Length: 425
Image (cartoon, rainbow, N blue to C red; front, top):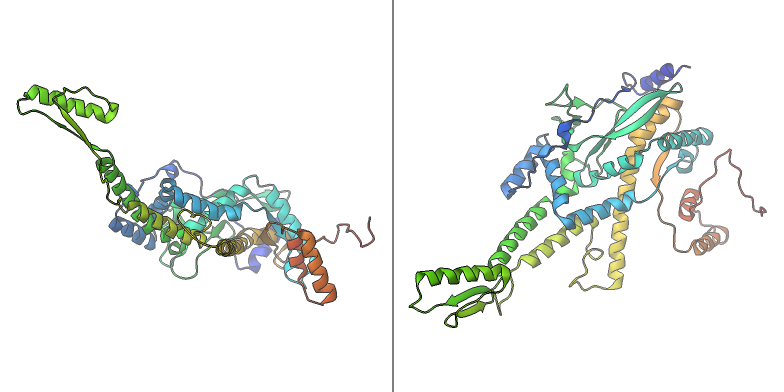
């Protein structure tokens, strides 16, 4: 069967009109790099207007604001990067469907997994694409275009290109569209098997509402306003007031000269005055409590940490009391969030990338492999192996083989691989 017939058969089985376009339909534009910087002069009313505009289907200004929020707020950048790196810092792997779903054709499943591994290994920028998709944790949507090409008679993905966030719009049914030269206002409908669309927090309602950057936008605004007021306060009251008293008989020229000397003290911290001049330095806020700006900013930082990491003890320790056990519990919360991010990422990659690859190569009947992240090895694999030995051989506990292979870091062999036997040396 020719590749065109095989692809047409795969598409007809799923009710699709035809194979995806091999050309890139969302090329880069010079205006994609331009930004309006909506955070400049941001107020609560302007923030609400930007969010309402995003709800109406035009999230470009909200996406620009979210980008600025991470650029301008070091704490927000740190917790957001921590959340993303907990996912993208792990190595990825392709798992045969036979390891997850017992009873499927293992030979066909292993062939499909091998093919997907080989296809992704040829994509030099695949890790960069995964980093782009991880930005959806904050924005709740990230889109990448699949560039198809006929190679050796097969339709394969030759590259994957991230789509700029400002190109994304939504229709009246909350379905994403992409702005193009042909559709600069309403955007084009996303053709099937052409885009990876990652919406990790989408449960119901508008997709733009589920991102963590939107959740923390009000905290960012409050922190930004508090920081501006604090800077103004420091400029007005942070330095001591310089006061010089002069004799009533002093001339206007002497007064001007004295004022110039006081101005010089602000930068040079040195001046020459007559013995008749009574010079005093009045320290601002001496003996009175400081302004509340620092405590307010610390509070807002903790709220951001809770939103992104589910806790604060792994990011904030200054002035915070807590037991070591509580810290371990908070670290476990971060692992739960990472597990959720891994599961959602794997679901998107399997649906939008691995499934088309398998269908166009093998047809619709072959099981699609799974996209997984490699978790850290346990601290003591020997102890874990002993526990498994007792659980399985002595207690008769049923342990999933896939879990044991993944936990011990031992891959499952394919049908064509030689394996070590019990008597092997």
